[in-house]
Image (cartoon, rainbow, N blue to C red; front, side, top):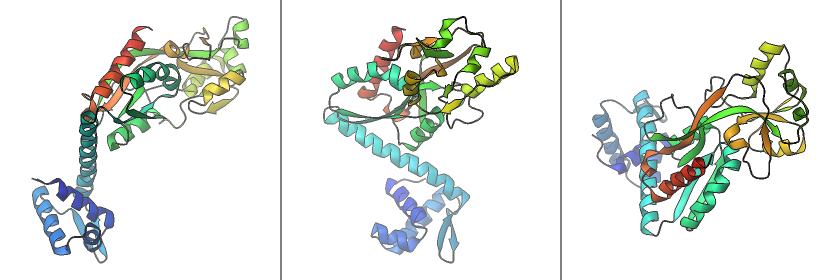
Length: 305
């Protein structure tokens, strides 16, 4: 077995340098000493971790697998140390949080002020991310948690977990004074206005949040018409909805409560789509008092909907 964290660090130094000589120089140790560490690790792993090349070394398939695991382990160790120091020093530190586009406008403005009052020493780094990007960054240790819609069926990486909070129903929405409300809207009417698509960059097989292209396909099948214009964007699309007669396909439960943006659901006969929402987090922080408070504040807000 690999018994020392320092061995993992030395192994990654070789992988990054591509040479035992260069890695030894960076670590400021002897090359024979580094070679002994590598030999010990290869014995523990049951096979060669590097292929010896004329000029340096390259990871074997076994080495690549170990490299991925090592980086996750070391990131978790660093985060654990940060969490402990934060708790000991009076609950300070940084919470690295991402959210879905609408969530950042409708939910977090109610959640974060309460969290800041309880933990004034905690700095929050907030970014807007899609589900798939957020999961990758969580697995890498770049983020601590993500809030928004998630796929409740697809298995997560082993170091991540979900906390479901509520189900969200998707619907067509527009600003309250949009001309589409001047009469009873039909599917044909949806094709007469430009659209905002918040699914920019999402995988084609994404089951988390159906985008405008999915709605367009349904409307095309039933009317033979396509949407006039589709603008792909992230949360910036909400600003566009203030200035022009755009439509969007959003979770109605929260879209209708975005501060300063009076959105209404357009009542049209579309296939109903519902998805789960909540938090995805690294398991190592789920008992952290700051994160526990973040979950509690979300539950308070959700209970009012």
